[in-house]
Length: 275
Image (cartoon, rainbow, N blue to C red):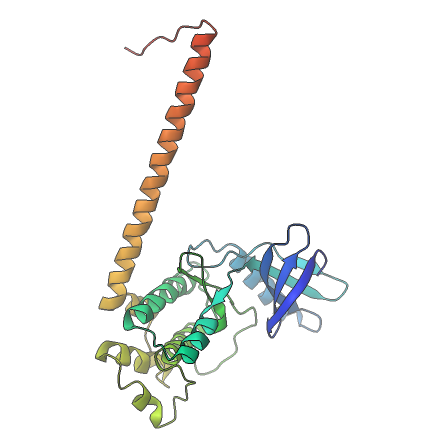
């Protein structure tokens, strides 16, 4: 991609790239459109346009796509954060540390809030399609950022893409809780989560239910007690940040007004006080 250097290949058609102009890192998705049917190209373009319009504080920002018409590729850069959930899982494995249930519920909450916006993005509902530990990032404050949305058309006769997202979330939480790979059909599946609280164990089992119609809908997840508490805390935090921002704006305006008044007084211009 012109203007960028590849730093690392982190998965099929995913790269960490450095922009030559300012040395800033980006997480970049490559889409090869040569050979796609007209319908597939239309679906891909619609998907890209939808993703570029997403404005969610939990979602990594997607920038305008770059088209390489010579090679038939589309590149979609996103903001880059160094630490992924995958890397943290490996760190915990190496040190023998376990994720606390509080950490796990926080992860469930952050991902579910993103899925809610995608699944209820009226009038065109959407989906993530690529939930895995490499698509979950942590920013400098330790807050979760979601990336890795799939740009491939979803094809399945047994489940909807939204139901698949819930299954992928359940699998991800199983991996976090057990620090091991999942095999839903294996008899040791439930044995490995036996140490979890009843609520978290039930979450994993329902989210990964082989019958898609018996899985959660994302709004059901947001009503789970442990999740609802974090959602409320998140709303309070956002409200505080907005109030602080408004306060800073008022202080800035007051300072600007005071400075202008001094300049007018220095110029011999009297300011009439409002009655």
